[in-house]
Amino acid sequence: MIKKFWRTHYKWYILILTMLTYGSIAGAERLCMPVLFKEISLDLNLNLVSLGAIWGADPLAGVFVGLIGGLLVDRFGIKRTLSVVCILAGVFSAMRGFSVNFITLAFSMFLFGMMAAMTPSIVPKTASVWFKRQQLGIINSIIYVSWAIGAMFATMTSATILSPLLGGWRNVVFAMGIPAVMTGLLWLFTGREPSKDEIQTAQTKTVPLKEAFWHVIRIKEVWILGLISLTLWGSNTGFIGYLPLYLRHAGWDPAVADGVITVFSGASVLGMIPMILLANRLKSYKGMLFFSMVMTIVLMGCLPLVSDAGVWLLIICTNFLRSAVFAIVNVLAVEIPAVGSRFGGTAVGLVTSIGMVGAFACPPLGNSFEHFGAGMPFFFWAAFSACSLPLFLGLSRLKDRQPKPSV
Image 1 (cartoon, rainbow, N blue to C red):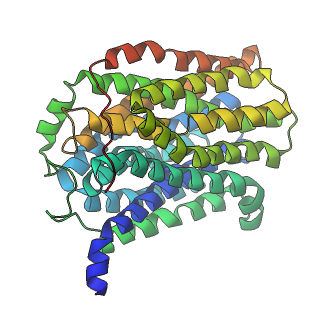
Image 2: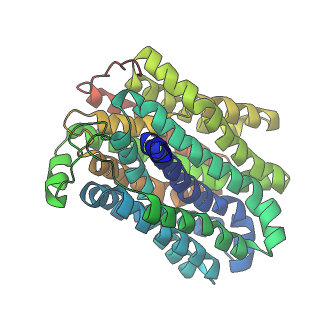
């Protein structure tokens, strides 16, 4: 009976492992850094542009490995790929704690980024294989909730609780690498690929790397979603890295400044599933993606113009309303008729790689505008996000599929 129960509900265990993967690597390990930047800058004698470059070294790796991650999971399967990615992510994350200057920290951030950038390419593949198509929006949103929870934990505790408790930022970074290694071991010893009767979507057989690559790069909609992701990842990464420093320089208490990033992630947790359900209700993922990009522009363009109370209100409202944006990009990529679950990893990987170009370039570029005024980086990222809006005209052939009732 226990064996039957385990087999029947095993996909939910896979979902838990996937959430642990995304929450620990892309959430906690990555987002512990912005709130530690003040301490790191004093220890390593780094200026604001140097911090932006270091923050951008993580997504720079994604430019090169985002697509590779999708190719690998399409070729070698979920279990083997995530076992390696999680263990190496934990090791490379801990290596950041040994940094002694700009070069060593940027290099270790790049190595960690190689693994972290693979996770957005791989986790949507997990959902597309184990769950039905009409469930993909909700399942992807649940996975992104795990990212927000990991990010909230890191931003809320890293600088104000863990650093004093553990004896500095280096030990915090060491500790943050442990969950990813443990998750990798769980994938290795308890994970498996779905059997034929458990596969929820067609065409889930492994695909030769060359076939997957040449098939996906010829799909126009994948490139358009990638360019939209470029503006989204770029503005979002720059915003998160700069905001705690901006608020501290504006006179905010460090714990309160870090708390804004925690609330930023918390609003995503609260809004993720409701906004996905609204997109299903309206039967328009494209429309919700467009609305989310508009909310991104409003958030970044208005933040320098509001008072202290206005910052909280703007962060909560806009991030709640745009909380489903990353999940929707992945769902739309897999839902392209020429992609499906068979090429889902490769398609999402290409979208991620293109997005990481923006995430690499925007933090140091946006931070450099601080020379003209503390709020100017936010105006830059708002304008950069606005560049995505005309791209939606190129998605006219991507028809919204009407969700079927869950069974």
